[in-house]
Each structure stands twice: as C-alpha cells, then as structure tokens.
Length: 241
Image (tube, rainbow, N blue to C red):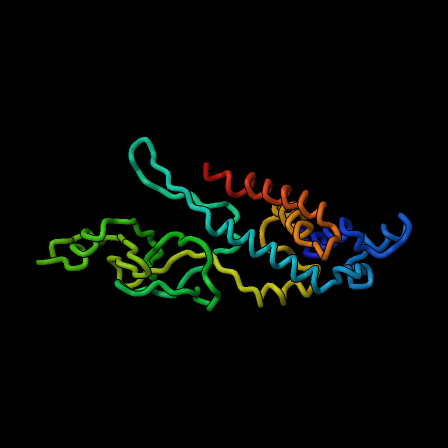
C-alpha cells in the first residue's frame, strides 16, 4: 500500500508535540487513528491546515529537485544519452503537438505548468524517438532540396524556446506540478503521496525542518533541515556524480 499523506503528517506532528494526548496510551490512540483529523492533530502552533500547506511546500521542493535532474552520459562508443531521476516517472506527462520552429509550451497537454528540464522528444504520430542533431543538419533535412532524402529523419534541436525538428509535429516528455490539484488531493488525507514511497523520509524531514514558529522548535528544525538536505543529496542530487 502506498504511503498516505496522513502518514507523513502524523510522523511530522509527533516530532512537534502535535498529537493529542497527555499519556502514552492516549497519544498512541490518536497517532494510529485513520483517517487522522484535526482532533488528533491538535498543536496550537501548527493545526491541520498549516501542516497541509507545509506538506505542499516540501513536495514542491522535492518535485523541483527530481524534475531538474539530468545527466549527460557518453558510452565508450561515443554515443550520447541522458539519464533522468527514476522518480521522474511519477510526475511525467507530455506536451501538445509542437510544429517545426514552434515555441515550446509552458504547460503540458492538460494545462499543467512544466517544471524542471525537458525529457525525450518523439514523433507525435508514431511515438518514434527523435535524436538531437546539429541545427544545420535539421535545416538541410527540412529543406530536402531535390528530394534527396529517401528515408525519414527523426531529429530535433532546441534553440532558446524554439523547437527545430524534421517531423510534422513532435511532443516532449515533461514534468509538471499543479499545486491546486495537489491541494485538493491531500484534503483526503488517505490519498498517497505524489512521489514513490522511498521519498517518505524526505517528506517528513522536510516538514519538520519548516515547522518553526517564533522560538519554538528552532533547534530541532535545524537538525531536520540537515536530515532533509542529506536525503536530497543521497537520493537525488548525488546521483548526478
């Protein structure tokens, strides 16, 4: 079963004395209640809605880290490829059709804002992957003077925000994040987190690192900020090495 949002909230709340109860038994009873509610999450400093907003802040940071991960690799034979973070599949969608010389959209086909680096480019009809080519070769193939090309070419080159390619239309794999959609989703606390279960620690540590109010929990927040950064470095950023 996927990690539910409530699991992250209760794990963060217990660390800021935010679970209702004054004895081990009453705290345990409140902690294991599902679905957990504002009755069990009774911190006067951080009630349920601020906890959910903090959850979203952490999720946004994680999504940006995952979506921005891209490593160029060159095989011994000289073949260039790109490696992306494996969590990217949880937030990957596709753009609408992009014509040759068309502007790369800022949203995907469902109007969600694109975040991070662009993924693969592929023919909009056949889904055949396009290979990055020098822009001069793209221009020559598109011009196809005297119809010298007898085999289809699947190539692209991005210049600024413009897509140059050799097909009728292409699409791109992209990462997106829609805060409004996610805010609605986590209103049902038994819904799963957006990223894979392995991100649970990062969610919890990130939340605790942000749960500071006046002088309350400042020392703990710093400790958990270090945990959070270590988790990012270990699970996301370090993979670029």
